[in-house]
Picture (cartoon, rainbow, N blue to C red):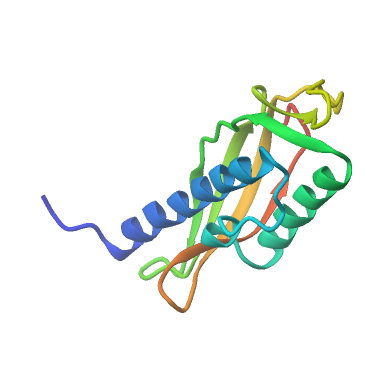
Length: 144
């Protein structure tokens, strides 16, 4: 068995960071904890800001999340190819069993049904060698 190339290692680490970001976010969303220390483990920059803002808005509006997202990330580009520092991930995220509920009475928030949607993310290698999601974009339900 040949050793994994730097690009293969980078792909695995970038996907792990991407999946970790969504799991960290789902954990924090259960209580709308926008200060959760977990959020910085796999996200930084615009991605971290978007997650924190979303959780703060949910907290302000008295909402918490139940369930978990289902992700199926694929690497769509690696840059530079031989020793990557930036990886773009394409995902068809599924929020069918992950939604918002009112914290005070447990009723659904009526913010629309979940479903499958395209998510594109940029994951970059940090100076400490870790990989973190730096930005992501989420498309409407039904885009994948």
